[in-house]
Length: 100
Image 1 (cartoon, one colour):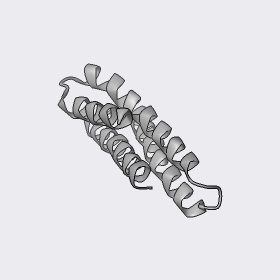
Image 2 (cartoon, one colour):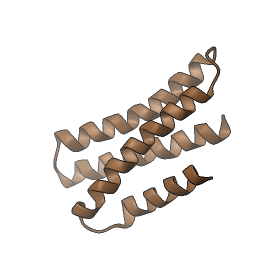
Image 3 (tube, rainbow, N blue to C red):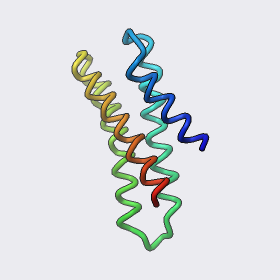
Image 4 (cartoon, rainbow, N blue to C red):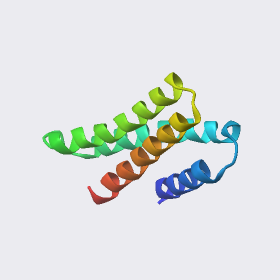
């Protein structure tokens, strides 16, 4: 329940805050949060559920890609792309954690 609240609040802040200076700390937190969710989801499966673990890690990889997009390209369009990737990582990771 707490993870869901953190995820929803982070996503709301990520897209509703104005100004890149206020959005960046939330973005970095959500990217790391997406990786933490992926780690928790992958570790929640038994060791013989390889496919499910790989899918969980793929959701975490979205957060890593989001960070790379943000770091490598400083344009406003790339920041929006990075925010969408980080949000997708969190949403898909939470869905996998709840459903799985």
